[in-house]
Image (cartoon, rainbow, N blue to C red; front, side, top):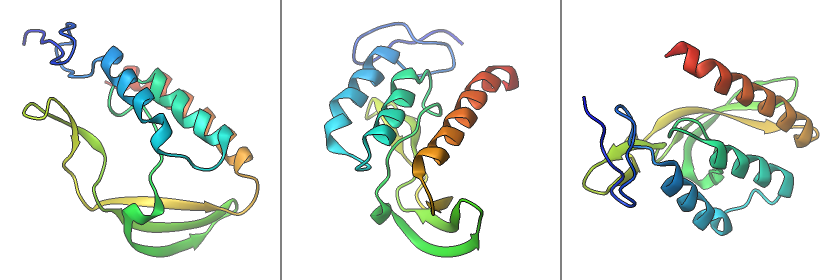
Length: 142
């Protein structure tokens, strides 16, 4: 396999990836004003994962509750209530050469939702630690 180039900026990309850090970061920044969790600390955390991403599976995004269907209570957990649901459009993690962009091509993706009982900032700290751990382990798993 040979390297290929970003269709937007013509930067050389990796052999197995269509991810262009410069262009993807610009897309994220351009979209920052189009969403909010209504909590500045959580918004900043999500934005931080987006700006640090080196691949389409390495960031978090805010997804409005209206994007989920078939939401069913699964169980009560220590930190909140867990639900199962289907994400109606799914993640934007498939490269589409026609669109020259990552697109959602996995509709009705099964997900778990957690509605937090107490302080969401404590939960956010745990998510942050887990996210950092996964980011460190991922290269070793490939």
